[in-house]
Length: 369
Image (tube, rainbow, N blue to C red):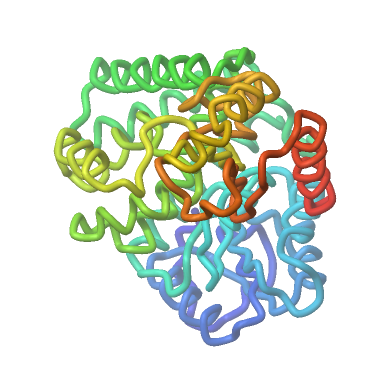
């Protein structure tokens, strides 16, 4: 970090930057700049992606605070360009639309952190400080005169580990505690993959659970991590994942400082919550009196065989969950099956297969390229 404290509003004329702010919202950019300059950082601003990327390439900022909403280029595209033009820079995304999907996509594209606007001064300074620490490691890994950062080797990871360990000590967390927590998360990642019947490489399993926890953090941040918002947090988690995974509930327990047994009590009480994996599509076979008399048992057997799951189970692809219900309220159509919001009267095996194929085609057609 530069030891000279810049004059407020002064655009540093030359030399490397601590922070580059790329944001078309002038008031927000100016407020962030004042906060960071007051903390002693060397800061420059740009209102467009084009100008900002050019500055990043020539001024080598440690941290780039990048808006997702830019006048000349989508923020996601600018994030990708930044990683190519200034690979040692640590991008921090800021957006007024703090959705789970936006945060996770930003992280996948290489963002170090995601800040929902408006951003508190303390949070901003702390995020930049951590980002600068990572930037130093990236520049050291790249070596003198290197064009950009290289893939980290064992020794780069050790340096990053020391940085994490130092932060743990600053929080009063001993090394053994940190290692125990990491081991627990690794075991949870394995359990989660096994519970879904998925076989993946260790690194993929770890990344999956990391993304789940990041998504959970974004949800809790919407409610300022208030424990009184627990039910709404669980509803949002249920909507995102379609169920309440064990590792997510334990994470919420720690973040909100709520005993995990209390969270499970609520999850068991409300029918809206599921503690078991649920598919993207819910298949419900009615077993009420009218449907039972007219062949619901045979219909259930047929559907169960086609999906390859028993009632109450979800297929390995997390596509379909099969359930039985006492009455759907469509006795005139008996026997009837409800798939998501649509009703089907006693479909044959071939008819049901066509329905499934149609749903799968809809998913492919609506999947972004």
